[in-house]
Image (spheres, rainbow, N blue to C red):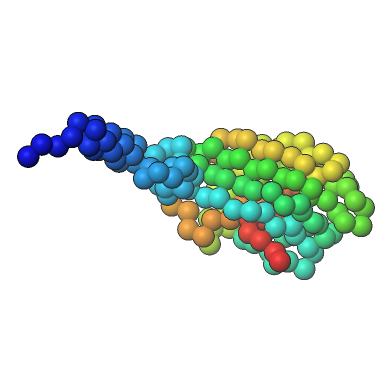
Length: 168
């Protein structure tokens, strides 16, 4: 039986492609959301929701004393190697139209029923229009059930003005 050379080359190219995808471990996706596999992979990712004074306390940490709003695109991502990236866009006090007296923010990782944060980043500037970006390295605990990330105003780890999650 004679197989045309073009068919053999096409089958060889297809086999090489299948092998390359399988060897990369990505199965054709971007490889960012493989929980717990590799140090640089995302283990937690969420949008951010603004706080209002009547929100619940989270692990004893209370919401800010005034309502906040936040623009779309505000997110937090934590990688297995401890790289935490938090992007805030338009986190403002609606009655003022700006971030008011809050000039810096930090982020705290909370796990399960623990009352103390598992880790807190350093503070970064918050613009008057409510924009900030935290890129920090934290120590990731071996186990973190029901993780949440709180955005703390002016280095105050006992209050939050935004939290991982969403509000309609």
